[in-house]
Length: 429
Picture 1: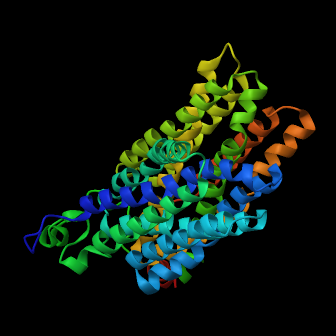
Picture 2 (picture 1 turned 45 degrees about the horizontal axis):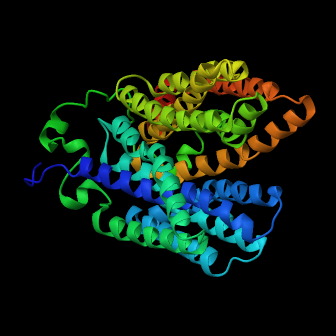
Picture 3 (picture 1 turned 180 degrees about the vertical axis):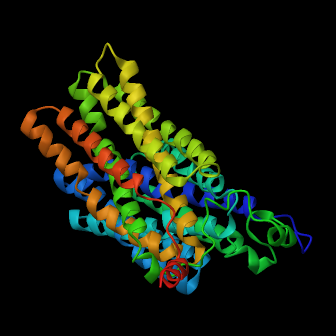
């Protein structure tokens, strides 16, 4: 670098990976384990219990608008800390106050949901977008693989803690509070807002080299400094929003109903749990493949390939049976890969198309809208099962929605900057 420092961006990716692991692995995946013990002490029906997760998913998405505003006003570091603070408040509430179902809904659904919203997706992806251009896809993918490992680390660790303490789930929530505080300290000490703040530029490229020659992936990345108001007028942006919702609908259905689908097919609980593990691993591989491709080919093609995983996965899911466990495992891997692949593509695409300045707000808006749309996936899937006594129609609906997403992406080309449009209009006159 010009100031003699080694590029900090890749170290920052490691910091973001750690934050994502701590903030997802213990409040969410570990929290799911704690909630199962809470259920024994705080009587509630399964609908109320499930409502807690639905609210969490909803507030993770809808809070994204506020997250974008927070990043714009206070920066990514303080936004991470706000998220950790909300997680700490929510987990203390659950540990010290929760004794009725509505306490659980407020603590887990609202407070933890908002905490995850502030401390994970939008904040992480904004940081990566600011620090990387040439290798943005790779950096985004590496940081986001943490969510795949989070389930393997957070849930077993919390389960072991509760078992070792005689089922003391309140102590477990306090431990998660400590982890949230640790996350805040890590963010405050090691997250840097922009490379320019420490005398560096994205990707560690020398300023002179950048000025002399365009980056090798300049055709994939906008050179115009978009403003949020300009982005919202772009058809490309709204097609991306629809494609994002289409790619997330199967994921939300799958996480809610996959275990029940397999048990209904006669597959043992142990094999069903293993298949869910394959789903998580598939997400890791999908993210890595997507990140590698995003730095090489047009974003919409990478996004399409990710969504295509759902088509094959849906077919194999219907074929799953005790004598066809391979189909069940393959379906889980493909669904995980489809989500991880398309999620990295979606976040990287926004950065490529509209730049880092507008990214926090426009990505926050996308996350909020898509969350509202896909929050119905679990309910719709359940109603289809009740109507047909089979999940096959739900998997067919997933495939149809994915087809809509691909059609949207066919027209999702690199948007023309407003200044370029004005130049074209002037030339015509």
